[in-house]
Length: 338
Length: 259
Image 1 (cartoon, helix red, strand yellow):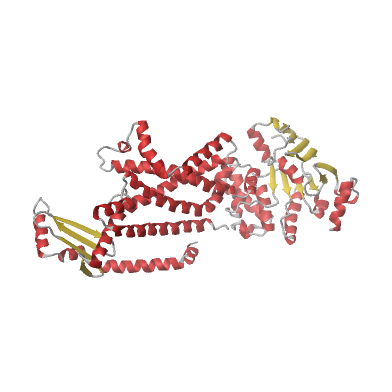
Image 2 (spheres, each protein chain N blue to C red; image 1 turned 180 degrees about the vertical axis):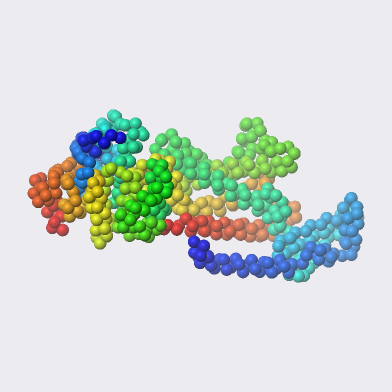
Protein backbone atom coordinates (compact mmCIF):
# COMPACT_ATOMS: atom_id res chain seq x y z
CA UNK A 1 0.00 0.00 0.00
CA UNK A 2 2.75 2.44 1.05
CA UNK A 3 4.99 1.69 -1.91
CA UNK A 4 1.96 1.72 -4.20
CA UNK A 5 1.18 5.23 -3.02
CA UNK A 6 4.69 6.45 -3.76
CA UNK A 7 4.68 4.85 -7.17
CA UNK A 8 1.29 6.26 -8.05
CA UNK A 9 2.14 9.83 -7.11
CA UNK A 10 5.87 9.76 -7.80
CA UNK A 11 5.74 12.79 -10.11
CA UNK A 12 3.61 14.91 -7.81
CA UNK A 13 5.67 13.87 -4.80
CA UNK A 14 8.95 14.71 -6.51
CA UNK A 15 7.55 18.08 -7.55
CA UNK A 16 6.32 18.72 -4.00
CA UNK A 17 9.69 17.71 -2.55
CA UNK A 18 11.57 19.99 -4.96
CA UNK A 19 9.28 22.90 -4.09
CA UNK A 20 9.68 22.17 -0.40
CA UNK A 21 13.49 22.07 -0.66
CA UNK A 22 13.53 25.36 -2.60
CA UNK A 23 11.26 26.92 0.02
CA UNK A 24 13.48 25.76 2.86
CA UNK A 25 16.57 27.11 1.12
CA UNK A 26 14.81 30.42 0.54
CA UNK A 27 13.65 30.47 4.15
CA UNK A 28 17.20 29.94 5.38
CA UNK A 29 18.53 32.66 3.09
CA UNK A 30 15.81 35.11 4.11
CA UNK A 31 17.13 38.02 6.21
CA UNK A 32 16.05 38.07 9.84
CA UNK A 33 13.58 40.59 11.21
CA UNK A 34 16.39 42.48 12.98
CA UNK A 35 18.22 42.88 9.69
CA UNK A 36 15.13 44.37 8.10
CA UNK A 37 14.75 46.79 11.00
CA UNK A 38 18.41 47.81 10.91
CA UNK A 39 17.91 49.12 7.36
CA UNK A 40 15.55 51.83 8.52
CA UNK A 41 16.66 55.47 8.44
CA UNK A 42 18.50 56.85 11.53
CA UNK A 43 15.59 59.18 12.17
CA UNK A 44 13.12 56.28 12.28
CA UNK A 45 15.43 54.26 14.51
CA UNK A 46 15.63 57.13 16.94
CA UNK A 47 11.86 57.31 17.13
CA UNK A 48 11.61 53.54 17.68
CA UNK A 49 14.13 53.83 20.54
CA UNK A 50 12.18 56.72 21.99
CA UNK A 51 8.96 54.67 21.71
CA UNK A 52 10.52 51.87 23.72
CA UNK A 53 10.74 54.05 26.80
CA UNK A 54 7.53 55.95 26.26
CA UNK A 55 3.92 54.93 26.74
CA UNK A 56 2.82 56.87 23.70
CA UNK A 57 3.81 55.04 20.55
CA UNK A 58 4.50 57.14 17.49
CA UNK A 59 5.68 54.42 15.14
CA UNK A 60 3.38 51.75 13.78
CA UNK A 61 5.36 48.65 12.84
CA UNK A 62 3.88 45.98 10.60
CA UNK A 63 5.96 42.87 10.15
CA UNK A 64 4.81 40.02 7.90
CA UNK A 65 6.76 36.82 7.67
CA UNK A 66 5.67 34.51 4.83
CA UNK A 67 8.33 31.84 5.37
CA UNK A 68 10.32 32.53 2.21
CA UNK A 69 9.91 36.28 2.14
CA UNK A 70 9.27 38.94 4.74
CA UNK A 71 8.03 42.48 4.77
CA UNK A 72 8.22 45.33 7.24
CA UNK A 73 6.33 48.58 7.08
CA UNK A 74 6.97 51.41 9.49
CA UNK A 75 4.96 54.57 9.59
CA UNK A 76 4.67 57.45 11.98
CA UNK A 77 1.87 59.77 12.76
CA UNK A 78 1.96 63.19 14.37
CA UNK A 79 4.15 66.20 13.55
CA UNK A 80 6.34 64.46 11.09
CA UNK A 81 4.75 61.78 8.89
CA UNK A 82 7.21 59.18 7.68
CA UNK A 83 6.70 55.87 5.96
CA UNK A 84 9.31 53.24 5.21
CA UNK A 85 8.84 49.78 3.77
CA UNK A 86 11.28 46.93 3.29
CA UNK A 87 11.18 43.51 1.69
CA UNK A 88 13.64 40.83 2.71
CA UNK A 89 14.36 38.05 0.20
CA UNK A 90 17.34 35.72 -0.39
CA UNK A 91 19.80 37.41 1.93
CA UNK A 92 19.03 40.95 0.87
CA UNK A 93 16.84 43.73 2.11
CA UNK A 94 15.14 45.82 -0.54
CA UNK A 95 13.49 49.17 0.07
CA UNK A 96 9.85 48.80 -1.00
CA UNK A 97 8.63 52.34 -1.36
CA UNK A 98 8.21 52.27 -5.10
CA UNK A 99 8.27 50.13 -8.22
CA UNK A 100 8.31 46.37 -8.33
CA UNK A 101 9.36 46.04 -4.70
CA UNK A 102 6.44 48.16 -3.58
CA UNK A 103 4.02 45.80 -5.33
CA UNK A 104 5.91 42.80 -3.97
CA UNK A 105 5.68 44.19 -0.46
CA UNK A 106 1.96 44.81 -0.89
CA UNK A 107 1.38 41.27 -2.16
CA UNK A 108 3.24 39.84 0.84
CA UNK A 109 1.18 41.98 3.16
CA UNK A 110 -2.15 41.13 1.48
CA UNK A 111 -1.40 37.43 1.32
CA UNK A 112 -0.42 37.49 4.96
CA UNK A 113 -3.70 39.11 5.89
CA UNK A 114 -5.84 36.88 3.68
CA UNK A 115 -4.24 33.77 5.07
CA UNK A 116 -5.00 35.09 8.55
CA UNK A 117 -1.52 34.06 9.58
CA UNK A 118 -1.34 35.46 13.08
CA UNK A 119 -5.08 35.42 13.66
CA UNK A 120 -7.28 32.69 15.12
CA UNK A 121 -9.49 30.30 13.15
CA UNK A 122 -12.11 32.98 12.56
CA UNK A 123 -9.92 34.72 9.99
CA UNK A 124 -8.84 34.43 6.40
CA UNK A 125 -8.01 31.13 4.76
CA UNK A 126 -8.30 29.32 8.09
CA UNK A 127 -11.93 30.39 8.33
CA UNK A 128 -12.60 29.41 4.70
CA UNK A 129 -11.06 25.95 5.10
CA UNK A 130 -12.66 25.30 8.48
CA UNK A 131 -16.10 26.38 7.29
CA UNK A 132 -15.83 24.36 4.07
CA UNK A 133 -14.62 21.19 5.78
CA UNK A 134 -17.26 21.28 8.50
CA UNK A 135 -19.96 22.10 5.95
CA UNK A 136 -19.07 19.13 3.76
CA UNK A 137 -18.94 16.75 6.76
CA UNK A 138 -22.31 18.08 7.92
CA UNK A 139 -23.60 17.85 4.34
CA UNK A 140 -22.49 14.26 3.76
CA UNK A 141 -24.01 13.01 7.03
CA UNK A 142 -27.26 14.87 6.43
CA UNK A 143 -27.20 13.90 2.76
CA UNK A 144 -26.87 10.20 3.63
CA UNK A 145 -29.90 10.37 5.91
CA UNK A 146 -31.86 12.30 3.27
CA UNK A 147 -30.85 9.82 0.57
CA UNK A 148 -31.99 6.86 2.69
CA UNK A 149 -35.25 8.69 3.34
CA UNK A 150 -35.68 9.47 -0.34
CA UNK A 151 -35.23 5.86 -1.49
CA UNK A 152 -37.37 4.57 1.37
CA UNK A 153 -40.61 2.81 0.50
CA UNK A 154 -42.44 4.91 3.10
CA UNK A 155 -44.17 7.58 1.04
CA UNK A 156 -44.20 10.20 3.79
CA UNK A 157 -40.48 9.86 4.41
CA UNK A 158 -39.45 9.94 0.77
CA UNK A 159 -41.88 12.78 0.09
CA UNK A 160 -40.47 14.88 2.93
CA UNK A 161 -36.90 14.28 1.73
CA UNK A 162 -37.94 15.19 -1.81
CA UNK A 163 -39.46 18.48 -0.64
CA UNK A 164 -36.38 19.30 1.41
CA UNK A 165 -34.05 18.68 -1.53
CA UNK A 166 -36.31 20.60 -3.89
CA UNK A 167 -36.39 23.58 -1.53
CA UNK A 168 -32.68 23.82 -0.84
CA UNK A 169 -31.62 23.27 -4.42
CA UNK A 170 -34.28 25.59 -5.76
CA UNK A 171 -33.47 28.74 -3.75
CA UNK A 172 -30.32 30.90 -3.66
CA UNK A 173 -27.78 29.99 -1.05
CA UNK A 174 -27.26 33.65 -0.15
CA UNK A 175 -30.92 34.03 0.80
CA UNK A 176 -30.77 30.79 2.78
CA UNK A 177 -27.81 32.28 4.62
CA UNK A 178 -29.78 35.47 5.30
CA UNK A 179 -32.75 33.48 6.56
CA UNK A 180 -30.58 31.55 9.02
CA UNK A 181 -28.60 34.61 10.08
CA UNK A 182 -31.36 37.24 10.23
CA UNK A 183 -34.81 35.67 9.99
CA UNK A 184 -34.43 32.76 12.37
CA UNK A 185 -33.08 34.81 15.30
CA UNK A 186 -35.64 37.50 14.48
CA UNK A 187 -38.55 35.09 14.68
CA UNK A 188 -37.34 33.18 17.70
CA UNK A 189 -36.00 36.23 19.52
CA UNK A 190 -32.34 35.50 20.02
CA UNK A 191 -29.06 36.72 18.61
CA UNK A 192 -26.35 34.48 17.26
CA UNK A 193 -23.62 36.26 19.24
CA UNK A 194 -25.50 35.67 22.49
CA UNK A 195 -24.83 31.97 22.13
CA UNK A 196 -21.26 32.75 23.16
CA UNK A 197 -20.11 34.37 26.35
CA UNK A 198 -20.45 38.15 26.47
CA UNK A 199 -16.80 38.58 27.45
CA UNK A 200 -15.70 36.80 24.28
CA UNK A 201 -14.56 39.53 21.91
CA UNK A 202 -15.06 37.17 19.00
CA UNK A 203 -18.63 36.28 19.92
CA UNK A 204 -20.01 38.13 16.89
CA UNK A 205 -17.75 36.19 14.55
CA UNK A 206 -18.42 32.88 16.23
CA UNK A 207 -22.16 33.47 16.10
CA UNK A 208 -21.98 34.35 12.41
CA UNK A 209 -19.78 31.32 11.79
CA UNK A 210 -22.32 29.04 13.42
CA UNK A 211 -25.12 30.54 11.35
CA UNK A 212 -23.08 30.15 8.17
CA UNK A 213 -22.21 26.55 9.03
CA UNK A 214 -25.89 25.71 9.58
CA UNK A 215 -27.04 27.43 6.39
CA UNK A 216 -24.29 25.91 4.23
CA UNK A 217 -24.63 22.51 5.88
CA UNK A 218 -28.39 22.35 5.28
CA UNK A 219 -27.83 23.41 1.69
CA UNK A 220 -24.95 21.02 1.10
CA UNK A 221 -27.07 18.22 2.60
CA UNK A 222 -29.54 18.60 -0.26
CA UNK A 223 -26.80 18.31 -2.89
CA UNK A 224 -25.06 15.47 -1.08
CA UNK A 225 -28.38 13.62 -0.83
CA UNK A 226 -28.46 13.35 -4.60
CA UNK A 227 -24.81 12.25 -4.67
CA UNK A 228 -25.42 9.54 -2.07
CA UNK A 229 -28.71 8.46 -3.62
CA UNK A 230 -27.26 7.96 -7.07
CA UNK A 231 -24.27 6.13 -5.56
CA UNK A 232 -26.51 3.77 -3.59
CA UNK A 233 -28.76 3.16 -6.58
CA UNK A 234 -25.75 2.36 -8.74
CA UNK A 235 -24.99 -0.65 -6.54
CA UNK A 236 -26.05 -3.93 -8.13
CA UNK A 237 -29.41 -5.18 -6.88
CA UNK A 238 -27.77 -8.57 -6.33
CA UNK A 239 -25.89 -7.09 -3.38
CA UNK A 240 -29.15 -6.33 -1.58
CA UNK A 241 -30.44 -9.81 -2.39
CA UNK A 242 -27.29 -11.55 -1.24
CA UNK A 243 -27.37 -9.63 2.04
CA UNK A 244 -31.04 -10.43 2.52
CA UNK A 245 -30.53 -14.10 1.71
CA UNK A 246 -27.85 -14.19 4.40
CA UNK A 247 -30.34 -12.83 6.91
CA UNK A 248 -29.05 -9.28 7.23
CA UNK A 249 -31.60 -6.66 8.13
CA UNK A 250 -31.94 -3.30 6.41
CA UNK A 251 -29.58 -1.50 8.77
CA UNK A 252 -26.88 -4.18 8.52
CA UNK A 253 -27.24 -4.33 4.76
CA UNK A 254 -26.87 -0.58 4.42
CA UNK A 255 -24.03 0.00 6.87
CA UNK A 256 -21.94 -3.09 6.08
CA UNK A 257 -22.60 -3.81 2.44
CA UNK A 258 -24.18 -1.00 0.47
CA UNK A 259 -22.80 2.23 1.92
CA UNK A 260 -19.16 1.06 2.03
CA UNK A 261 -19.44 0.22 -1.65
CA UNK A 262 -21.17 3.51 -2.45
CA UNK A 263 -18.49 5.56 -0.70
CA UNK A 264 -15.97 5.04 -3.46
CA UNK A 265 -18.48 6.06 -6.09
CA UNK A 266 -19.38 9.16 -4.09
CA UNK A 267 -15.84 10.48 -3.65
CA UNK A 268 -15.42 12.21 -7.04
CA UNK A 269 -18.77 13.94 -6.57
CA UNK A 270 -18.09 14.83 -2.94
CA UNK A 271 -14.75 16.27 -4.06
CA UNK A 272 -16.65 18.35 -6.55
CA UNK A 273 -19.12 19.42 -3.88
CA UNK A 274 -16.21 20.38 -1.62
CA UNK A 275 -14.84 22.73 -4.27
CA UNK A 276 -18.31 24.21 -4.81
CA UNK A 277 -18.71 24.81 -1.08
CA UNK A 278 -15.19 26.29 -0.87
CA UNK A 279 -16.21 28.91 -3.41
CA UNK A 280 -19.72 29.37 -2.03
CA UNK A 281 -18.15 30.01 1.37
CA UNK A 282 -17.12 33.42 0.02
CA UNK A 283 -20.77 34.42 0.48
CA UNK A 284 -20.05 34.90 4.18
CA UNK A 285 -18.80 38.36 3.25
CA UNK A 286 -22.50 39.26 3.41
CA UNK A 287 -22.59 38.55 7.13
CA UNK A 288 -19.19 40.17 7.80
CA UNK A 289 -17.20 37.05 8.50
CA UNK A 290 -13.52 37.72 7.76
CA UNK A 291 -12.85 35.03 5.17
CA UNK A 292 -10.45 35.37 2.23
CA UNK A 293 -13.03 37.18 0.13
CA UNK A 294 -14.05 39.64 2.83
CA UNK A 295 -10.45 40.48 3.69
CA UNK A 296 -9.59 41.07 0.03
CA UNK A 297 -12.69 43.22 -0.42
CA UNK A 298 -11.78 45.24 2.68
CA UNK A 299 -8.23 45.77 1.44
CA UNK A 300 -9.63 46.91 -1.89
CA UNK A 301 -11.98 49.38 -0.20
CA UNK A 302 -9.59 50.76 2.39
CA UNK A 303 -6.40 50.90 0.35
CA UNK A 304 -7.73 51.10 -3.15
CA UNK A 305 -5.49 48.29 -4.24
CA UNK A 306 -7.04 46.56 -7.18
CA UNK A 307 -4.22 44.00 -7.32
CA UNK A 308 -5.33 42.34 -4.08
CA UNK A 309 -7.64 39.95 -5.91
CA UNK A 310 -4.76 38.23 -7.68
CA UNK A 311 -3.24 36.72 -4.51
CA UNK A 312 -6.83 35.96 -3.41
CA UNK A 313 -7.35 33.84 -6.52
CA UNK A 314 -4.00 32.13 -6.04
CA UNK A 315 -4.88 31.23 -2.44
CA UNK A 316 -8.17 29.68 -3.57
CA UNK A 317 -6.39 27.73 -6.30
CA UNK A 318 -3.80 26.36 -3.89
CA UNK A 319 -6.50 25.22 -1.48
CA UNK A 320 -8.48 23.61 -4.32
CA UNK A 321 -5.41 21.80 -5.63
CA UNK A 322 -4.49 20.55 -2.18
CA UNK A 323 -7.91 19.14 -1.38
CA UNK A 324 -8.27 17.76 -4.89
CA UNK A 325 -5.13 15.75 -4.26
CA UNK A 326 -6.42 14.55 -0.88
CA UNK A 327 -9.73 13.37 -2.37
CA UNK A 328 -7.90 11.66 -5.20
CA UNK A 329 -5.82 9.80 -2.66
CA UNK A 330 -8.89 8.76 -0.67
CA UNK A 331 -10.55 7.48 -3.84
CA UNK A 332 -7.54 5.35 -4.69
CA UNK A 333 -7.48 4.00 -1.16
CA UNK A 334 -11.10 2.89 -1.48
CA UNK A 335 -10.48 1.32 -4.88
CA UNK A 336 -8.20 -1.46 -3.68
CA UNK A 337 -10.80 -4.13 -4.34
CA UNK A 338 -11.54 -3.19 -7.93
CA UNK B 1 -36.59 -26.11 16.83
CA UNK B 2 -38.03 -29.57 16.79
CA UNK B 3 -36.59 -32.08 14.37
CA UNK B 4 -39.83 -34.01 14.23
CA UNK B 5 -41.23 -32.86 10.98
CA UNK B 6 -42.38 -34.59 7.88
CA UNK B 7 -41.35 -32.08 5.24
CA UNK B 8 -38.50 -29.65 5.60
CA UNK B 9 -40.14 -27.50 2.97
CA UNK B 10 -43.64 -27.53 1.56
CA UNK B 11 -45.62 -25.21 -0.68
CA UNK B 12 -49.35 -25.24 -1.29
CA UNK B 13 -51.01 -23.46 -4.18
CA UNK B 14 -48.19 -20.93 -4.55
CA UNK B 15 -48.93 -18.35 -7.22
CA UNK B 16 -47.09 -15.26 -8.30
CA UNK B 17 -48.18 -12.50 -10.61
CA UNK B 18 -46.16 -9.62 -11.99
CA UNK B 19 -48.93 -7.26 -13.05
CA UNK B 20 -51.02 -9.33 -15.44
CA UNK B 21 -48.29 -11.84 -16.11
CA UNK B 22 -48.85 -15.05 -14.20
CA UNK B 23 -45.40 -16.46 -13.47
CA UNK B 24 -46.31 -19.19 -11.01
CA UNK B 25 -49.61 -21.00 -11.06
CA UNK B 26 -50.58 -23.15 -8.16
CA UNK B 27 -47.25 -24.77 -7.31
CA UNK B 28 -47.42 -27.63 -4.83
CA UNK B 29 -44.17 -29.15 -3.69
CA UNK B 30 -43.09 -31.28 -0.78
CA UNK B 31 -39.42 -31.64 0.08
CA UNK B 32 -38.07 -34.16 2.54
CA UNK B 33 -34.91 -33.59 4.48
CA UNK B 34 -31.84 -34.65 2.52
CA UNK B 35 -33.59 -34.64 -0.84
CA UNK B 36 -31.78 -33.22 -3.84
CA UNK B 37 -34.21 -31.71 -6.30
CA UNK B 38 -33.28 -30.30 -9.66
CA UNK B 39 -35.67 -27.95 -11.39
CA UNK B 40 -35.34 -27.85 -15.15
CA UNK B 41 -37.37 -26.22 -17.85
CA UNK B 42 -37.36 -23.54 -20.53
CA UNK B 43 -36.51 -19.97 -19.62
CA UNK B 44 -39.49 -17.98 -18.46
CA UNK B 45 -41.02 -21.04 -16.85
CA UNK B 46 -40.84 -19.44 -13.40
CA UNK B 47 -38.07 -21.64 -12.00
CA UNK B 48 -36.03 -18.82 -10.56
CA UNK B 49 -39.07 -16.96 -9.32
CA UNK B 50 -40.22 -20.04 -7.48
CA UNK B 51 -36.84 -20.45 -5.81
CA UNK B 52 -36.70 -16.78 -4.90
CA UNK B 53 -40.20 -16.94 -3.48
CA UNK B 54 -39.10 -19.60 -1.05
CA UNK B 55 -36.66 -17.34 0.76
CA UNK B 56 -38.74 -14.21 0.39
CA UNK B 57 -36.74 -12.42 -2.26
CA UNK B 58 -40.06 -12.35 -4.09
CA UNK B 59 -43.41 -11.93 -2.40
CA UNK B 60 -45.86 -14.55 -3.55
CA UNK B 61 -49.30 -13.43 -4.63
CA UNK B 62 -51.08 -16.27 -2.90
CA UNK B 63 -50.41 -19.66 -1.41
CA UNK B 64 -48.84 -21.19 1.65
CA UNK B 65 -45.21 -21.91 2.44
CA UNK B 66 -44.35 -24.34 5.23
CA UNK B 67 -40.89 -24.74 6.69
CA UNK B 68 -40.43 -27.79 8.91
CA UNK B 69 -44.19 -28.25 8.88
CA UNK B 70 -44.76 -24.81 10.36
CA UNK B 71 -46.87 -22.40 8.37
CA UNK B 72 -44.26 -19.84 7.48
CA UNK B 73 -46.35 -17.61 5.26
CA UNK B 74 -49.89 -17.60 3.96
CA UNK B 75 -50.93 -15.00 1.43
CA UNK B 76 -54.07 -14.49 -0.61
CA UNK B 77 -54.52 -11.87 -3.34
CA UNK B 78 -51.30 -10.09 -2.44
CA UNK B 79 -52.23 -9.78 1.21
CA UNK B 80 -50.59 -11.62 4.04
CA UNK B 81 -53.19 -13.72 5.83
CA UNK B 82 -50.92 -15.31 8.32
CA UNK B 83 -47.26 -15.46 9.07
CA UNK B 84 -44.89 -16.30 11.84
CA UNK B 85 -43.71 -13.60 14.21
CA UNK B 86 -40.74 -11.74 12.79
CA UNK B 87 -38.07 -13.37 14.95
CA UNK B 88 -39.27 -16.86 14.25
CA UNK B 89 -39.54 -16.05 10.59
CA UNK B 90 -35.96 -14.83 10.55
CA UNK B 91 -34.81 -17.96 12.33
CA UNK B 92 -36.45 -20.21 9.74
CA UNK B 93 -35.21 -18.12 6.83
CA UNK B 94 -31.67 -18.64 8.04
CA UNK B 95 -32.22 -22.35 7.42
CA UNK B 96 -32.08 -21.54 3.72
CA UNK B 97 -28.85 -20.65 2.01
CA UNK B 98 -28.92 -19.24 -1.47
CA UNK B 99 -26.45 -19.25 -4.33
CA UNK B 100 -27.08 -16.82 -7.16
CA UNK B 101 -26.43 -17.02 -10.86
CA UNK B 102 -24.26 -13.90 -10.68
CA UNK B 103 -22.49 -14.92 -7.43
CA UNK B 104 -23.21 -11.55 -5.74
CA UNK B 105 -20.11 -11.66 -3.60
CA UNK B 106 -19.41 -8.49 -1.65
CA UNK B 107 -16.67 -6.88 -3.76
CA UNK B 108 -15.29 -4.68 -0.99
CA UNK B 109 -14.59 -7.62 1.29
CA UNK B 110 -11.98 -10.32 0.93
CA UNK B 111 -12.98 -13.93 0.33
CA UNK B 112 -12.61 -14.74 4.03
CA UNK B 113 -14.57 -11.65 5.07
CA UNK B 114 -17.31 -12.59 2.61
CA UNK B 115 -17.68 -15.95 4.29
CA UNK B 116 -17.42 -14.64 7.86
CA UNK B 117 -19.65 -11.60 7.52
CA UNK B 118 -23.11 -13.04 8.08
CA UNK B 119 -22.30 -15.55 10.86
CA UNK B 120 -20.66 -12.76 12.85
CA UNK B 121 -23.15 -10.01 12.09
CA UNK B 122 -26.40 -11.98 11.88
CA UNK B 123 -25.81 -15.00 14.08
CA UNK B 124 -23.58 -13.05 16.49
CA UNK B 125 -21.03 -15.82 16.59
CA UNK B 126 -17.50 -15.32 17.87
CA UNK B 127 -15.19 -14.06 15.19
CA UNK B 128 -12.33 -16.51 15.67
CA UNK B 129 -14.67 -19.52 15.69
CA UNK B 130 -16.32 -18.36 12.50
CA UNK B 131 -12.98 -17.75 10.90
CA UNK B 132 -11.85 -21.26 11.65
CA UNK B 133 -15.03 -22.68 10.15
CA UNK B 134 -14.72 -20.35 7.17
CA UNK B 135 -11.20 -21.58 6.44
CA UNK B 136 -12.46 -25.17 6.63
CA UNK B 137 -15.23 -24.39 4.17
CA UNK B 138 -12.83 -22.62 1.83
CA UNK B 139 -10.54 -25.61 1.81
CA UNK B 140 -13.55 -27.83 1.08
CA UNK B 141 -14.35 -25.78 -1.99
CA UNK B 142 -10.65 -25.81 -2.87
CA UNK B 143 -9.88 -22.15 -2.30
CA UNK B 144 -7.95 -21.98 0.97
CA UNK B 145 -5.09 -20.08 -0.65
CA UNK B 146 -7.47 -17.38 -1.91
CA UNK B 147 -8.79 -16.41 1.53
CA UNK B 148 -7.27 -12.93 1.50
CA UNK B 149 -7.97 -12.05 -2.12
CA UNK B 150 -10.73 -9.72 -3.21
CA UNK B 151 -13.43 -11.36 -5.37
CA UNK B 152 -12.43 -9.31 -8.42
CA UNK B 153 -9.16 -11.25 -8.53
CA UNK B 154 -10.99 -14.58 -8.81
CA UNK B 155 -12.42 -16.37 -11.83
CA UNK B 156 -16.17 -16.83 -12.09
CA UNK B 157 -15.95 -20.44 -11.01
CA UNK B 158 -13.86 -19.53 -7.98
CA UNK B 159 -16.28 -16.75 -7.08
CA UNK B 160 -19.19 -19.13 -7.26
CA UNK B 161 -17.44 -21.60 -4.98
CA UNK B 162 -16.80 -18.79 -2.51
CA UNK B 163 -20.50 -17.93 -2.73
CA UNK B 164 -21.33 -21.55 -1.85
CA UNK B 165 -18.94 -21.44 1.11
CA UNK B 166 -20.50 -18.15 2.19
CA UNK B 167 -23.99 -19.65 2.20
CA UNK B 168 -22.78 -22.78 3.99
CA UNK B 169 -21.10 -20.72 6.71
CA UNK B 170 -24.57 -19.93 8.06
CA UNK B 171 -25.14 -23.66 8.62
CA UNK B 172 -28.32 -23.81 6.58
CA UNK B 173 -30.40 -26.97 6.29
CA UNK B 174 -31.54 -26.22 2.77
CA UNK B 175 -29.48 -24.87 -0.07
CA UNK B 176 -31.12 -23.07 -2.97
CA UNK B 177 -29.12 -22.84 -6.19
CA UNK B 178 -30.39 -20.40 -8.78
CA UNK B 179 -28.68 -21.42 -12.03
CA UNK B 180 -25.29 -21.47 -10.33
CA UNK B 181 -23.33 -22.32 -13.46
CA UNK B 182 -25.20 -20.33 -16.13
CA UNK B 183 -22.89 -17.30 -15.91
CA UNK B 184 -19.72 -19.36 -16.06
CA UNK B 185 -17.38 -20.10 -18.90
CA UNK B 186 -17.85 -23.77 -19.90
CA UNK B 187 -14.45 -24.87 -18.61
CA UNK B 188 -15.22 -23.50 -15.14
CA UNK B 189 -18.56 -25.27 -14.71
CA UNK B 190 -17.04 -28.57 -13.64
CA UNK B 191 -15.42 -27.30 -10.44
CA UNK B 192 -18.65 -25.76 -9.21
CA UNK B 193 -20.69 -28.88 -10.03
CA UNK B 194 -18.11 -30.99 -8.24
CA UNK B 195 -18.55 -28.91 -5.09
CA UNK B 196 -22.33 -29.23 -5.37
CA UNK B 197 -22.03 -32.99 -5.86
CA UNK B 198 -19.94 -33.33 -2.72
CA UNK B 199 -22.44 -31.21 -0.86
CA UNK B 200 -25.28 -33.49 -1.99
CA UNK B 201 -23.36 -36.48 -0.71
CA UNK B 202 -23.19 -34.95 2.77
CA UNK B 203 -26.98 -35.18 2.95
CA UNK B 204 -27.74 -31.51 2.40
CA UNK B 205 -31.26 -30.74 1.21
CA UNK B 206 -30.84 -29.01 -2.12
CA UNK B 207 -33.06 -27.29 -4.64
CA UNK B 208 -31.20 -26.50 -7.84
CA UNK B 209 -32.49 -24.62 -10.80
CA UNK B 210 -30.12 -25.80 -13.49
CA UNK B 211 -29.52 -26.36 -17.15
CA UNK B 212 -26.87 -28.99 -16.45
CA UNK B 213 -28.77 -32.13 -17.39
CA UNK B 214 -25.82 -34.39 -16.65
CA UNK B 215 -25.66 -33.06 -13.13
CA UNK B 216 -29.41 -33.43 -12.63
CA UNK B 217 -29.30 -36.96 -13.91
CA UNK B 218 -26.41 -37.98 -11.70
CA UNK B 219 -27.14 -36.17 -8.45
CA UNK B 220 -30.85 -35.46 -8.20
CA UNK B 221 -33.27 -37.63 -6.24
CA UNK B 222 -36.10 -35.96 -8.05
CA UNK B 223 -36.34 -33.80 -11.15
CA UNK B 224 -39.07 -31.23 -11.63
CA UNK B 225 -39.88 -30.05 -15.10
CA UNK B 226 -41.43 -26.61 -15.00
CA UNK B 227 -43.12 -24.86 -17.90
CA UNK B 228 -45.45 -21.86 -18.03
CA UNK B 229 -45.57 -21.49 -14.27
CA UNK B 230 -46.57 -25.03 -13.41
CA UNK B 231 -44.75 -28.21 -12.55
CA UNK B 232 -45.51 -30.02 -15.77
CA UNK B 233 -43.92 -33.27 -14.73
CA UNK B 234 -41.82 -34.66 -11.94
CA UNK B 235 -40.12 -37.91 -11.12
CA UNK B 236 -36.79 -39.64 -10.70
CA UNK B 237 -34.06 -38.66 -13.19
CA UNK B 238 -34.60 -41.96 -15.05
CA UNK B 239 -38.30 -41.33 -15.46
CA UNK B 240 -37.82 -37.78 -16.67
CA UNK B 241 -34.82 -38.27 -18.90
CA UNK B 242 -35.52 -41.71 -20.37
CA UNK B 243 -39.27 -41.89 -20.31
CA UNK B 244 -40.88 -38.45 -20.16
CA UNK B 245 -44.66 -38.48 -20.23
CA UNK B 246 -45.70 -34.90 -20.89
CA UNK B 247 -45.42 -33.50 -24.39
CA UNK B 248 -43.69 -30.33 -23.12
CA UNK B 249 -41.02 -32.36 -21.39
CA UNK B 250 -40.34 -34.40 -24.48
CA UNK B 251 -40.00 -31.28 -26.65
CA UNK B 252 -37.74 -29.58 -24.14
CA UNK B 253 -35.44 -32.56 -23.74
CA UNK B 254 -35.30 -33.09 -27.49
CA UNK B 255 -34.37 -29.46 -28.04
CA UNK B 256 -31.63 -29.70 -25.43
CA UNK B 257 -30.20 -32.96 -26.69
CA UNK B 258 -30.10 -31.71 -30.26
CA UNK B 259 -28.15 -28.63 -29.25
